[in-house]
Length: 180
Image (cartoon, rainbow, N blue to C red; front, side, top):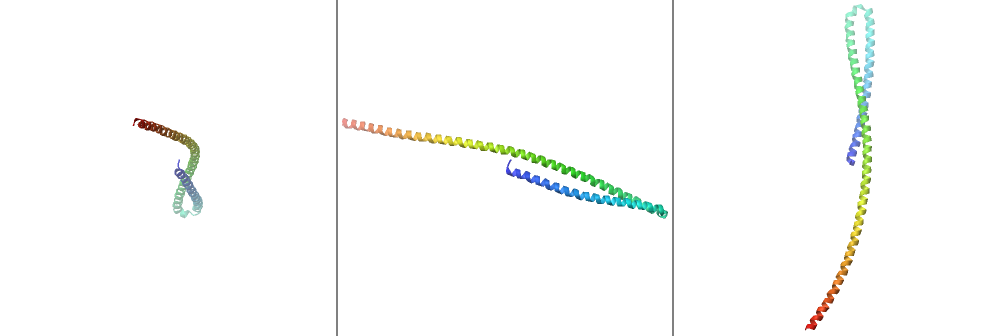
């Protein structure tokens, strides 16, 4: 694994952490909104109760008040529906956060294992490199030694050939002098 892909994975982990932070902030915001809606719902229920008490005492306003109560009931139902939706959103966001945490933990463990493998392979490669260098040094030393021996042998052969050549030259010179 290259340093670049490791950095990419590290950046991806940082991005996931940032997403988790954003989702956590959004979750807090949703919780505050749910609390406000619950308070509003409680307030509406309280108002409904007060209106029911007033209806008992003020019969003249029965028809108008019944319509108001129906409207309030609809609003309460709408708000309760909104609260339920928000609670479902909170549950979903929590499950996303848990999934991200699990995924990040899994990725971190996998990266750690891969780093160990890479480190072990790197050590093996360094050992192989050292072994190859040592073998090459031995071969170079042997070749140098063999080359030196060949040079010495060649010098000896050249000297021997010169001496033989001089002897033959003497013999030829002696023969040519005697034949003349």
